[in-house]
Image 1: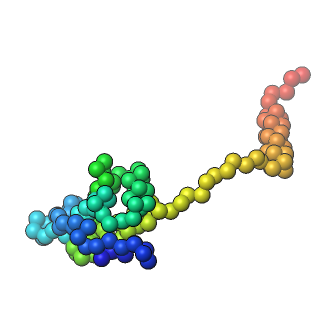
Image 2 (image 1 turned 180 degrees about the vertical axis):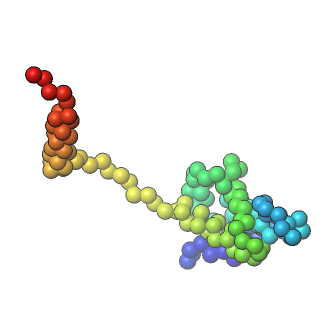
Image 3 (image 1 turned 90 degrees about the vertical axis):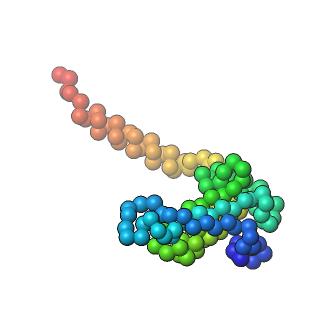
Length: 137
């Protein structure tokens, strides 16, 4: 059971975890042990509320396929259990990030003081450059 919030949680049957061999440099156990985790989560078949599904499907994330399946590969750690925890944590963070409402930006005008300061600095820069020019006799 993966708890997303106080009211939303995912059952174990909704998340498919598969052990795979991690990529990277070799070692003594490299071709024997499947320590990496491949997590698959079908958004459309899940028991998430409709608003969660809608926002997740709208999200432009490379981990979400066109069919609405989230695929996460976790291979940062040396043990399968730690990679499993990492994959579940990343899934939870992805779902939570989809629900964050971004603040709308309202365009503002620059203040009179900031305009004056900008023009003053331009005048100073211009006069400095004018002083560098060749003097005409």
